[in-house]
Image (cartoon, rainbow, N blue to C red):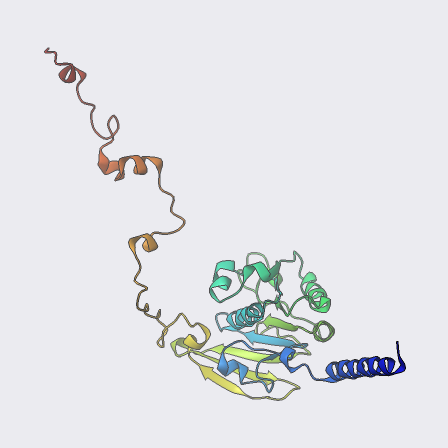
Length: 289
């Protein structure tokens, strides 16, 4: 190889190295935020959505929209073909309802620890692995309630556990969502409070944040969180061409009985020997008594 060719190849290699250094130093804004698709919620934080690499607490009462917001975040990650995990403390996550919110169940790992002490530990291991774009740990109800009381305030994390969750999210680069109740909030993480306002909708407010947006509040109708609902909380009308047929109205779980198939209309078909008397053999044979 001539000296000129060697100089050219050396220049190309140096250009590639410089380009690699620029890419490594450039901010990865396209991986910095996980948007839920709910404009009112995404606009609350300066990043325009849930920041990746951080732990965020969704604190609210039952039916305040906290779980639905978490499902919307998981669905957003699934639209990017990324994996998510859900640490289900109360063991109340209903997969068909999650699928209706856009969650891809084939990309969702559901973990249900048997002991309360395993909830935070499991979430830390999942978030720290870096394999999941979003890890949700549900600390509401369930494990901390006394037997037979039928009521629970939720599992409260210590400040040390909250810092472990935040550190695990930072190391793994994903979003860690903590679902909690107002009587047992988590410490050491960004907190977003959800509140149901009755039929009018719900309110979402940032009550703790180091990245800005503190005190931001948004009031939205339920239809913003559940697109299947109409503007007044009723089911949206069917679009043109979506008129259900009789087959669509039949429940999928219904399994017809064999005799219904044979006799077309079931017991009203008068099955010989069961629902109606058998015809006389003597009349068919043409004999007279």
